[in-house]
Length: 102
Image (cartoon, rainbow, N blue to C red):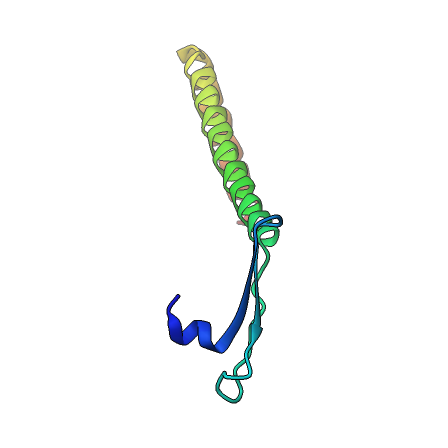
């Protein structure tokens, strides 16, 4: 930390609570203040929230890809007659839709 830093503050190393406590010394420059930072639990909470969010995104993406693959496999299982009939239905529907605007 260095001598100039330690001259400006009183430091207490609390080994029982695993903490360091600081206070401004009377030798410190005028206007010296101590800023409060986030506690370890707050940082840990944000880290866990981000990790869980990322995990949800990854699992959701994997499930969606699996769903698309299963859908593709089930569509490939149709025989050619079913595919032709399905295509014919789609064309008929498109023609009816087109006629409704004419």
